[in-house]
Image 1 (cartoon, protein in one colour):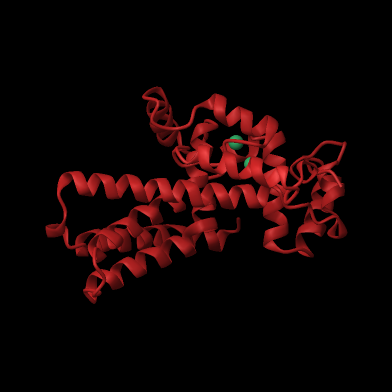
Image 2 (cartoon, rainbow, N blue to C red; image 1 turned 120 degrees about the vertical axis):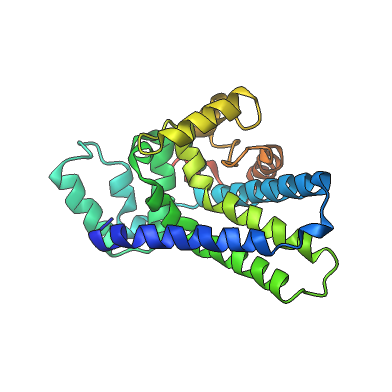
Length: 248
Ligand SMILES: [Zn+2]
Ligand SMILES: [Zn+2]
C-alpha cells in the first residue's frame, strides 16, 4: 500500500461509517418491534454470510493463471522474503489482473495465514468498500424516496446490516487468525467463539486443510448450505479439487 492510499483511508472509512449511520437514522423505525428488528438483523447477517461464502467457494476453486506465471510463484521453493522472489512476484503481478492476484492470495492463505495477521484494517476495507457502499446508497434511496414496496423499511435496514457484514468478512477472518493490527477484533472474535455464536477455530482449520467446508467467514452459520453446494459441485465435476490445491 502506498502513501497516498494511507492518506486516503481515514476520510474514506469515516465517509463509509457516516453514510451507514445516516442510513440507520433514515430507516422508518416506527415499522419495527424489537423482535422484528432482531429477526431482520439476523436474516441479513445470515445472507451476507451465505453470499460471501459462495464468493469464497468460487474464488478458491478457480485455477491459478499459469500463463501469467502464477504457478512459478505458488510452487516457489526458496525463501519468500528474498529479492529473487519479490522480483518474480512484482513481474507477475504487474502483468495480470486483480482477480488473478486474488485467486493466488486465497490459495496461498490456505498454506500460510501469516500475512493476513499483519494487514491493517484499511487493506481489507479497500477490498469490499465499493459494493458495501452501493448497498448503503440503495438503503438510503429506499428510505428517502419512501419506496412503494411493502416492507421497504425492513429492506432498508437489512441492506445496512448486509453492507457492514460484507465489508468486514476479511477483517473477521483476520481476527479469527489472531490479527496483530486489530487486537480489539481478536478479543471480540474470541468472546463470540466462546459463546459458540460463530464458527470455531476447528471449523476454520478444517477449511485450510481440506477446502471442502467452512467457506463462510462472517458468522459461519450459512456453512451448512455452502458446504452442501461444494459437495454437489465436486460430485458433478463442476469444480475440481486440483484447482483448490493449486495443481495444474
Ligand atoms: Zn479458502
Ligand atoms: Zn484462514
